[in-house]
Length: 269
Ligand SMILES: N[C@@H](CCC(=O)N[C@@H](CS)C(=O)NCC(=O)O)C(=O)O
Image 1: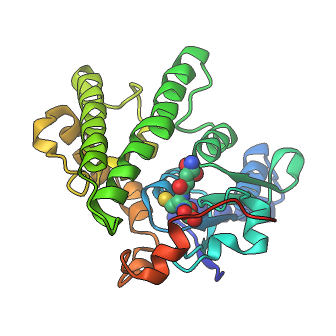
Image 2: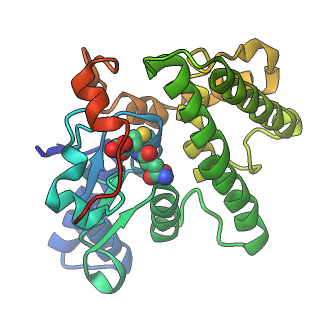
Image 3: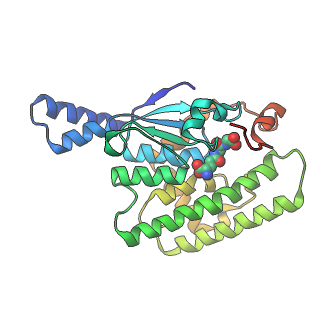
């Protein structure tokens, strides 16, 4: 797995400020913190809606990161070193060299990563308990609802070699119901949990695929407005562009790709 260091503007500025203050001899707590944050996080990633959640959050926070592509169509998610970080053979995953107690920490599961980064930076994940519960509800709603259900539509409608009408309709309908839930929720608020948060970041990559999910976004005006607002954010644009070029030309109906991704069963080790 190759590494590509992605240094965003904010992280460069923070590191520069920290350096400047250190040189002048005044090592303030802020300078120390900025220097600490400047240690890049390893991001194990492939350009999919689950991957976008973390690239968006890293971009929004201005955290420096090394982009380590995990080409899931070639089976890189089964490499021994990756499985040590992500035993579920799924990306995204991160390794933060500056974890709790200043020691490295590895994390898999996108929801857990978002919460960790939110706690680490104090951004997009409120510390007030009521506000945090709002965010958590919608984050878990994404993890257990729109993500897996839209994923099933992608599978049965776009990738399966057999046309299974019952399965296609079942998941298109469920995604339609979930879009309706979001549309109602967004009637009187700008973002899903009120203020912009990790819950919005978790959802955007999924709703962005509305056409592939057999949906018409125009039937959901509040959701459409939210999607447009989200996609206009520079960090969201950068996060959702990360590694897209590596996916070009991959045919999900290629038997070699299908053999890697579909029909997986328990591993012996
Ligand atoms: N619940 C996991 C799901 C991650 C996931 O499903 N990732 C897919 C790509 S979107 C993956 O790595 N697939 C590899 C495989 O199927 O072997 C999370 O949110 O992190």
